[in-house]
Image 1 (spheres, helix red, strand yellow):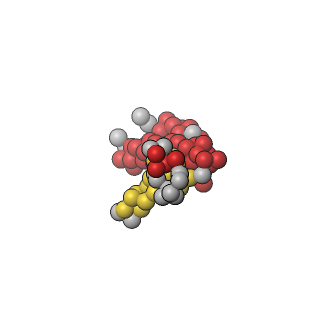
Image 2: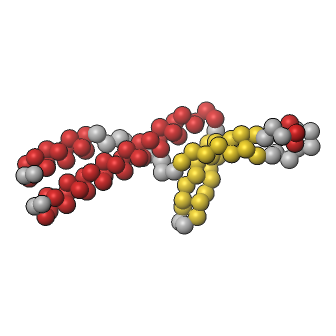
Length: 102
């Protein structure tokens, strides 16, 4: 592929990138827990369900609580992160071809 076509492809690929400021790295996880209150339904087997963002940070997994009202927004930010990561991989491949002429 010649340089001009690669530059055109790079520009088009860059146009498909999500907004980096709306990205979150991680995965959403639903966790079921006991609250510990003596008369709560969770002691009878109906655990409380909550959504957490699971993220590797400095070599450790951290769990960040996501309020129910923010779950859709968080899922969208995670999807944006994955899209940006995919676009960056494509751009990297194009830039390598431009540098090496292959």
